[in-house]
Image 1: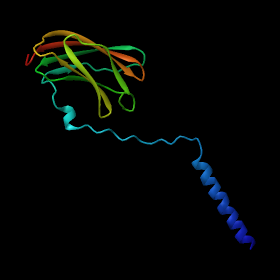
Image 2: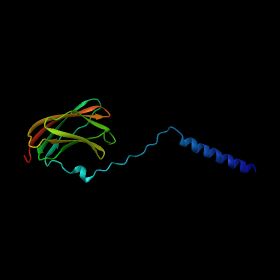
Image 3: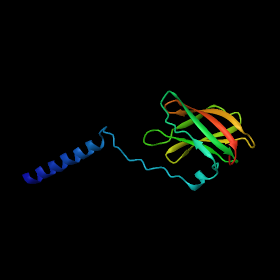
Length: 148
């Protein structure tokens, strides 16, 4: 009889320990799977597209250069937070004068796409503010004739 009470007490203590462990504030680290990149994310790129490497720094502006041929396609700058993981938000801080900018997530990166106006050749600039961190990517663009 005493052995059964001791066994029952041990089961109660173990069950309590398991429940307390489940309620602890210790964070559990979970590996985040890489986000998929689809073929449609890569279609439409300009045949000529050269960009400088960009590493955003929280609260500071970072300069980038882009050179592309005007064949109707986009040229992109890809940036990410540590992890890597995409930024939560990309805001157009300065509009380009001769093209359009799209900011979106592609896989684990935030991609900043620029498409020049049809027939435009020359220089353009734009800026994108990335959150969190409030880094501003300032882009100097050179649009050339397609194939040159």
